Length: 352
Ligand SMILES: [Zn+2]
Image (cartoon, rainbow, N blue to C red; front, side, top):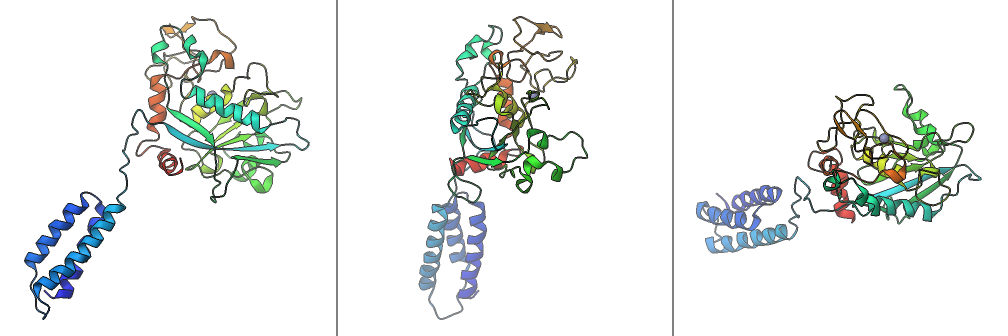
């Protein structure tokens, strides 16, 4: 084998090693020894010179490759790891705005999310004794985005004045085309979603009936939806804890609930009026139907006491106080390898 061929052969091996990125130094030395022994010199250059040349190439390649060896990212997120998700808030509002949606109001919502998803909400201790051990720290924190998709600095809040409402983002019929959903189209008075593998999109938009009454606090998309509509939509009066705010929707729990859907959770009662179809979570009791208002404990159905104080029921804000450990596991699994929001998780590792 010629000198040139020996070097080419070695370089080919180095290339294949760099793809594997495991025990790089050990592999390099093994190949060095193997090739020095097996090579035959046909050119005048003596063997020791060739060895020095090959050694220089190998060591420089090996050391460079070792320096860029990436941190291994586990397929399953460690149980103590906090996942930090950037939020972009798209405020779509009339001009002049009937609702003042201040930066402070938006920040009050972020604060609520960071309490509820970290079991820091003071009212979580109100859980009944039969459920208290199930109350979970989901281990997710949220913050307003600091960079936009182009990498420019941002407050994480983008404002648009238009007559587009929250109803312009709600898919009423399956045949509704994306172009008809003005809320998600910047060129129609709404705002385009930012990439869902980098952000949680929240649109704040009016959900009044024609009399101006709030009839729907918010809605959400599940993880496998169309990326152009991925996120949650919330009426200004159900967002944050500051005025304007609707009675009974004044603790910021609409966003906690809707983001629960965005993170794959189902309603705790599964299918309303059915004891068979649950929420795919083991530690939430089977529940016949939804609760509203402020129920008094205990309430029961389907042979057990109901966990109506869960964030994924439909009670008033002051009555919902907890996620369970089973819900936590369901949420976190979507960030594991192969999960529906894995890429978002991987991107948060670079940005946080
Ligand atoms: Zn819901």
